[in-house]
Length: 332
Image (cartoon, rainbow, N blue to C red; front, side, top):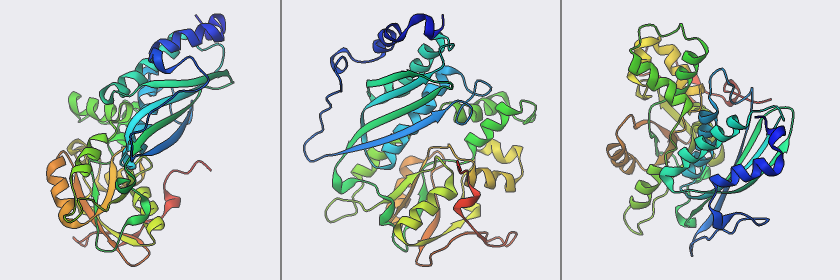
């Protein structure tokens, strides 16, 4: 059955089954924010053929990835999720089963965080377009901002980079990676199709004070557009620079067994969609957080007073490289 056969009201009735009964049915949802908390709002748009396609992404995985992108933005602000709304535009010829599987992927991604779908909108269009708005809450004193990095801060990444781009390569070119084991191939593909937002880091940061007042100064954002983009954006907002150590960037072990190091570095810096957090904070706190996180978390460099971001190689095999935003993915 196609959505045009089901009709707007019929489709809405089916989609409302994915939402809590007590939070839908009116013109807007009512969300309660705890006392002393700020409301955090983020919106992410995904377009068929730009952000996903049936060549690499099932409807379930498209829903998961769309949701993970928004939850990752909340994690990058140090926020806990409250709910999401979904704006969905569809050609009338889309099968109803595609839409239902898409919502199943959304719910599966939300479920570990007990986060509901609290509303949305649907309309007809010539291409599938998804706009998800996520709502979260955070104490103003614990919000993570891009603009608070200081010279001397350690630059910490919460996990490996380059996995999502490698997974996309395997999906687009199945003949690649012939030396990979089935488990390694599946892990890289899953990194692309079902990324996990690092909301677990938020709880660790909430408990990790810097001594005196129990509050932690931390700058950061997520690495959805690549590690280089994240460091550059933080430095621009904080009016500082950075040095990234090439040999400290964490990759999946299977990646460096498959491609040359230069390719692995390129995918880590510019591949994007790894959805890890890039945090700038005092070194001792960063070292403690790396020990708590494990699983590829690493200190990859430091914040400097000089307003440039440099990729360095202390082995001497590669010269210094100035990183620039223009080298990463840009829509226009």
